[in-house]
Length: 101
Ligand code: FES
Image (tube, rainbow, N blue to C red; front, side, top):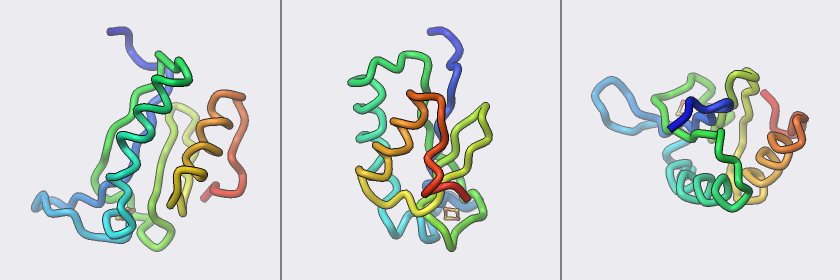
């Protein structure tokens, strides 16, 4: 596998104990991971990797999703439509302004 050009991180609210706590987890951010992975495959975005993370410290605006190396932090990503908007922007090389933190 080649190193990814983009890395999407989705907050899964993990704490040091390993237990998920926080708004992202409660708003089922983990359920978006397979959706995002499938969208990446469907869109042919071979250079994009998705991972889940510990708490990203923006709990009040969760679920939170970050795109690196662009350093784009998105909040309130609470639907497949929101994910689609962010992935559309990633594909177009733009920013999904309505979700930007
Ligand atoms: S639980 Fe997601 S930012 Fe804290």
